[in-house]
Image (cartoon, rainbow, N blue to C red; front, side):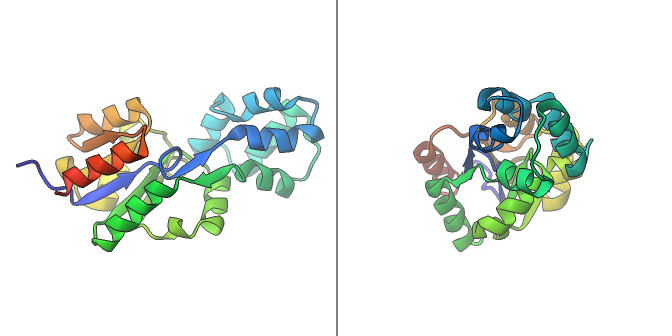
Length: 202
């Protein structure tokens, strides 16, 4: 018999929340010297964003570097509000999480993300508070798929190997979990993921 998971670990972006950096770029570009598409390149999966989400620069440092690269002339609070307001709920996946909580399955968030986004999500989305723990790249100092951030998850949960079921939309992150013996689901379709999670707990 396969091991029944003792904890479920969710990636955040594109699993529980959708996001689109074009929303932020469109809002911010008019106060800069760049058009929306050029501004988006500064923010979306860029070397600068990776520095920020790895904890190598602060939120203030990130803002100052965006200003340098784009000529943005708005205030730091205006920038943070627009930069963060890019998320929307993926309702079926939130329902899956609620079902697991109702069944008393421990759940965790495991995300490559940043301080501005987490602050916004914590204030905006009530579901975000309903987890047993959260591991964020900017706090650990490395991003998935670096092994040290997976170590942090195992330490928080107090479990290892097949006792952990991990959902993520990026293959390289899933591969790193599988290499540790975690049960994994590469998420692309909500209905398929939900059915597969149900099978693991049957």
